[in-house]
Amino acid sequence: MLAESIHTFLVSISPLGEARVGIPLGVLRGLNPFLAFLVGLGANLLVFPIFNTLISKFDHRLWQYRGYRKRSVKLQRRAKKNVGNKIGKYGFWGLMVFVMIPLPITGAYMGVIAARVLCVDSKDAFKAISLGVTISCGIVAALSFFGTQASLDA
Image 1 (cartoon, rainbow, N blue to C red):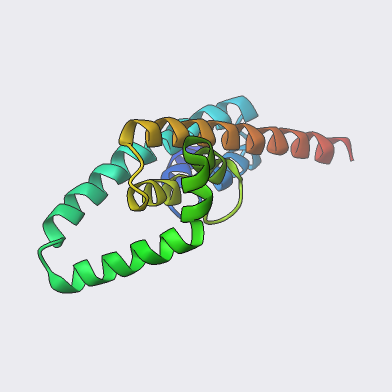
Image 2 (image 1 turned 180 degrees about the vertical axis):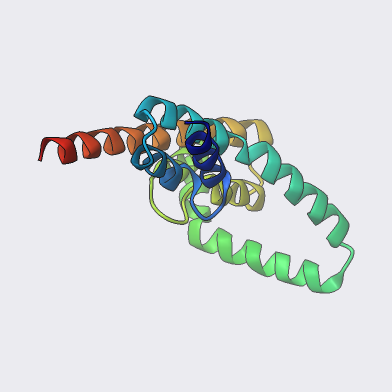
């Protein structure tokens, strides 16, 4: 059970899976769906403070280089064009819904990047991303639970 919990945690904190993959994987490996939810949620909630801090440190150090600045500004313009209107228009709730939708490219990592690019206050971003992650994890855990129940009944 410890190995499954650690595996669920590591997949849930990784940018490739997040809790959307970690929770179902934990349930498939035999974890109780509630425990898989808690482990996946805990790991995914750690994404904001860790990733936001890393981005801040790297951005601060690399900003002095012209190539980095140029690419960074280009990325910011593209991000504002693609998601800026939606998140900017709805603010906190837009960011929360963006993170909440359990689809690829809409998780906590992209939420942190979107919040930084769109200059959302860190406290508001943390609250919105945390709420979105919690709801997303709840949806995924419920689907995992009902999916395993349906497979056992069949």
